Image (tube, rainbow, N blue to C red; front, side, top):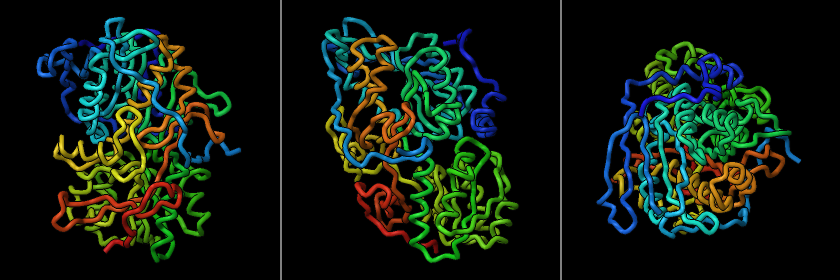
Amino acid sequence: MEDQTWPETPFYSRRHILALGGGAAAAAILAACGSSSKSSSTTAAPAGTTPSAATTATTPASATTAATGGTTASATTAPAAAAGGTNAAKFGGGGGDGTVKIGFTAPLTGALAGFGEANPFILDAINKLTANGIMLGDKSYKVEITQKDVESNSDTAASRAGELITSGVDLMLAIATPEMINPVADQCEANGVPCLSTLAPWQPYFFGRGGDPAKGFDWTYHFFWGADQLVKVFGDMWQTVDTDKTVGLLCPNDPDGNALADPKTGFPAGVSALGYKLVDPGRFQDLSDDFSAVIGQMKDGGVEIVSGIPIPPDFATFWTQAKQQGFKPKLVTMAKAVLFSSAVEALGDAGDGLASEVWWTPNHPFTSSLTGEKSKDISDKYEASTGKQWTQFVGFVHALFEVCFDVLARAGSTDKKAIADAAAATKLDTVVGPIAYGKNGLPKNISPTSLVGGQWKKTTGGKFPFELLVVSNKQSPEIPTNGTLTPLA
């Protein structure tokens, strides 16, 4: 498939991307990493045939599967009780009355490729679920999902969204960081295409797009935790370790970094409220190769806690150089950078004891509204299918499709306005918890999710080299703990 254009769509220049996050240099992390933009495209076999009868072709940058068949706007209160909604989706009927087209953008290559690691597993399950169609009203529609690799590049994300819009998708799905989601969501908002997204803190998603809490957006809806939740979760962990109460900030010059470094809603306010001192060396460019100045300032400032939200390659560089330069903080609470077991394993023994935010685990007490599977059922299947350790993305990408099919079923057709209206009215219990947009004084397009704190600990004779344990649940007590936070050795 050749690159296509959508004349009325505001494709982003790098200058426009830079403006998305209050001047954040989002494009810096987003250099293409020399990966091929090709991926597999699978067309499901007609109803009545076996999965092995499917045919496979190769198309550039896409993979299409046709399956027949009273608070302030910046403060987050995650729902503690169930939203009370069951999934409206019903599957079957043969899919002979039409096709519902779903676009799906994700970073499958480049610096953020880990965020798409669970996609093949999830899509395989979704293809089987929808193989005989989905009922929209009294008609049965084929389900066609076209996944496009945004290559960890914001410009590419905007372009891929334009291609999908041009191809006539009825609904867009997008994942993984504001840099990858915001260009897609803006394309959809400008062109009247409903969009559901997750895997980015909601403030840089919403405010990074110029969102007005009083008005919100008409076509784009997002579920994930908020930056303020992250500060509280990390603060809870800091207070369990005996330190000099000095925190070093490691935040890049991108939407996530700028949101968490915000003086009013980010780390500075949270650190001050706890009576801690902040050492902030300033924003750094993504994919930096020398953190000596940052490390020097932290050492000079007596930092014993390091916290921030860098991308995995940058944290690996920082942490390796910190070890080399004799910088030994007692605690590291790092968002985004150590979400992946592979990122922790790459650090070897230096990965032991690193702490991070936790959005979903096999022990989360939630059930899929699509399949009835518990969190552990899904994570066990992932490990058995892939041979890899469970990852938090499994739960959230699965939940994205839960919301997707519930919305489509309640819309009752492929009419885009009906789909957007159904999205706004979502009230659904998912495998990551309840999803309901615009509650507790938040913008109408936002649904927060639970957040707890975790720590990676090296195993002895375990199935995998490290395990992620939930060690702090003060902000979301419905999530059970299974470990105790310990200082770094």
